[in-house]
Length: 114
Length: 114
Image (tube, rainbow over all chains, first blue to last red; front, side, top):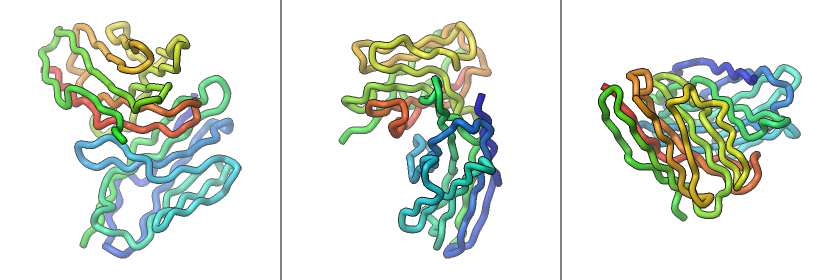
């Protein structure tokens, strides 16, 4: 089955700096890669996603890049703000008969220091 | 509109007791998922319902776990004879139509087994 590795597990940045979180996946048939933000006591919320037919997608301060050859994708947050502090999860959704299953990384705790 | 709701938000039970966790998906969403999130871990897929099709139960960790979805809407996850290792946050998600549509998560139920 699919395996998703996420790094780093914790990340601390100063307000205004950029933050980058990286994920690798194992199943070359995976074709959908969402990123979720989870604040304390809440469920994960989708912040951006990318499908395998594009290499990069941007939404304001957030961008995701995908390298299908290397089987890795990354989340980039620019001009970080204290409210960006949360746990971020990457996920991969497979192709074939299990294309509804999301396999998640173990999360990155991002702390933005004012 | 209303998002995915789950109840109760917190549940404390004694080892050996049965518990029922409820999920109300977004109205009109045909796909429903249950995940388990253990402390410091990513989300672990448990079960998937799609319309009237037979559910994919491949992620259920033991036969003490079961789930049903009545009328294609509300779902209940039941854990029988709870064990301490069942302590986790149980998250429900729904998606609109296709398996590859975005999954929207509820706030979760935090289960503590004493």
